[in-house]
Image (cartoon, rainbow, N blue to C red; front, side, top):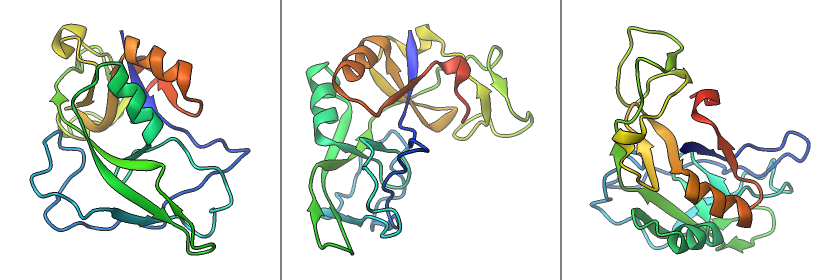
Amino acid sequence: MYWMLECYRDPWLGGRSIESWPTLDGIASWVSGEPLHTPPPRPIVLYWDPEDEAGPAQPLYKAGIPMVRRDVIETLRMAGVDNVETYELEVRSHVTGDVDVSFVAFNIIGVVAAADMGASKIVQDGGPRWIAVPFDSVVIDSKAAHDLPIFRLAENVSAIVIHDRIKRQLEARHAGLSFVKPESWVG
């Protein structure tokens, strides 16, 4: 059984967002599933958006340079996940000058063509069958996933797919993460 890993912002609580995602020399993509061949600067420096900085931080940010709290990475490692590269990261505040070092940038190694395209629902057909398929529902082919604990979905690389045993460990230790059944996932 597989799940889609998300982190939805609570509409009642709001939440912090990153001001803008910098382009880093030599790094074309954080979602290709390939190891980064050019190391990013140490640390990578990001800034909280001053307009929503008072809200709570999410444990996971998937856009731009993916970032996750260090304790979530520790749980993944304890669960046996070994295909995630991490990089030092600082998130700074324009407002207070504080520097948050509780996050790391991360890169998932591994893209798997595991969507059952015949059983999945695609928003519009005739488009690309790789990288950014617009799903209204996706069916994960467990055989194609080879029991991997975590990977990016080749048909839509913004999707992070996790095995049920990883989901259970994350769910037990970390509030704020969302686990969506693939058939309910839209992306």
